[in-house]
Amino acid sequence: MNILLKTLISFSLLYLFNIQLLYSQNEISVGNITVPSPKLLVGEEYTYLVKYAFLNLGELRINVFAKDTIDGKIIYKSRAYIDSYEGLPFVDMHQIHESWFDSSFYPVYYRALILNEDDTSDTRYFFQNDNRVHIIKGEMNSTKVVKDTVINLDKRFQDGLSLIFAARYHFGFSQTILFPCYIGEDTSSAIINYYYNNEDISIDAVDYKIKSLRLDGTANFSGIFGFTGYFEGWFSDDEFHVPLTADLQVLIGNVTLELIDWNNKLWQPPAYNE
Image (tube, rainbow, N blue to C red; front, side):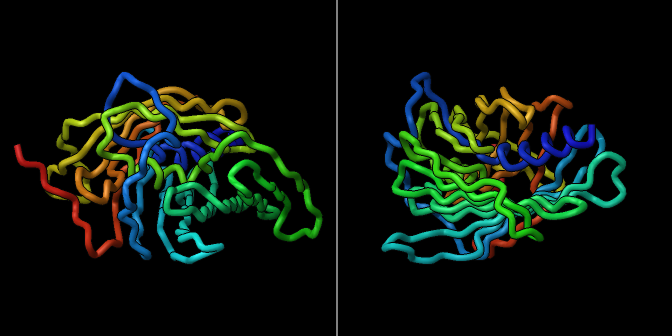
């Protein structure tokens, strides 16, 4: 049960905030639409409480820590930190995920550090020429490479963290979008339904109702992650589209994430006016 819970919670955290916005009956590929200019700020950071039933499991923290130019492209560098709270009887989890992506939100580099009792596993993806990925896997305290291979792809894919940012900046389209994903060394997808009408949402960190947009969709991931299917989330109805709260069905039940803190001097949750 230990390993299953860690796997489910970890990847549900990263996947859950990959998901946003408006509605249509027509499914399209994200590569066929124009992506709006990103509203990204270097230094922006959002922290979420992770809850399972009545138990607070830990926190997810996501930030944009740098902006660079590589091979003539503007590249944003982001990280996600996943940390369980001390004293939990069934989970002790500490992970760092890093994604570098261009202005179209496609990744050029992804890294996952999974802190275990004996060592830290290190997985890196190098996305090359838009149609292949170089995978290197190993352990931090060992010079032995567990895996070093190149996989040929037929299109551009999102990794688990870049998908968060790609989804945030597709508001304004009344449609369903199919996001191709490369996660866990396998190709898959996320189908996201975007809804246009705003709703009021409440979180403990804000003492008023927040104007938000709701989304739902289907995770087509399968295999070792142990979760798939329906999800939903609410995001601020403004130019930042900050994830506020979300729910994801996994094998152990329903996992909820809720915004508890943020570092963005230009953003405050927009008030809902009836």
